[in-house]
Image (cartoon, rainbow over all chains, first blue to last red; front, side, top):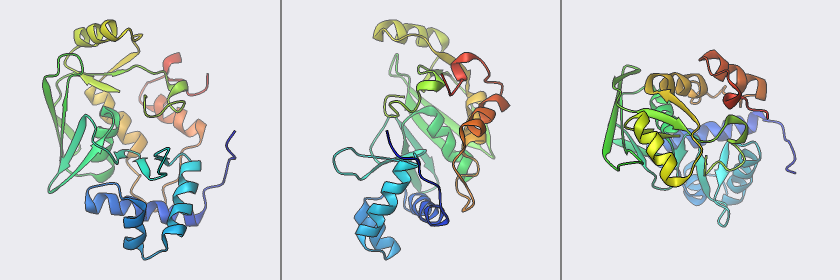
Length: 153
Length: 72
């Protein structure tokens, strides 16, 4: 069982710097890239990210220990592309995709496809409201199991 | 959490992949859920939800059935 740790001021500052990077650059960074941007040694950044993973704020790639998910952003291409202005991010599910306009408070377009028929679907959010709302969201996994396998969920 | 064209497409997809049908939300409910869960995420003062806070966020938008219970 993983040890529970407290969320410290240092974790908060590091988390905030990570999210600012993702929003400004339009992607989840590799740890080396984040270290360079923050002018910190990579060793310190790896330790900070490990703490955020223990706190379930990020999910790491199992082999490389690079960031896979800093919710709601994903490091790898997914079925949800979220665009705002000149920036675009990947989200793994429609909840995460809708989270990006919610947290950034920016007009956003979300491109995806229906998993049943593969037909393209696009959502537009302007001034915090859905302009077009085709479709319906399906949650396959009950809430009690969301964190058992976050990639599947 | 995937976006389908319709309920009928959810049913067909669950049948094809032998996945038990879960819960469905409208997109406007999904946006409300995204707002209660994520709207303060860019704040330096953001803190992770405790389990009761997370459950309260779900309750706030009316997701109160067994499916939405975070503890088994």
